[in-house]
Length: 142
Image (cartoon, rainbow, N blue to C red):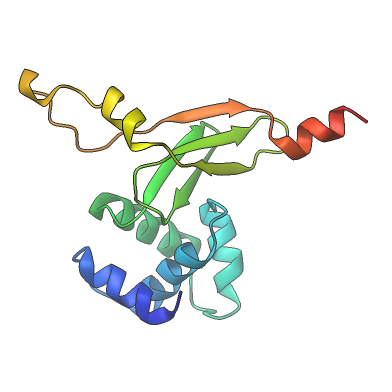
């Protein structure tokens, strides 16, 4: 991904680009780690010394409101963000706290999609799983 992709993503979602917004979107597109506000701030503050945590928070919230990013609340103690807005689920390891993408088969998505003929209009959906990741499970076996 390049900064140009970040700029195009912002424009595609009707978000007015600024230096801070482009940098934050670029970070989300390059880092698939589901970062928190603090993680994005720490990563970008060296490049943009005038960046504040409030700006990062407000920008990520703006991205989420416009559909350019997902706000994940798998763990009620921390909110993280995902630049991948394609339909997918998330898995959170209860031991290490990492969040992983789980890509779902189209057939699965079709079976859980509400029946539109009954009047449901879905704007967003979240599917979360919690458990133990492979790396943590292997540590337990030692």
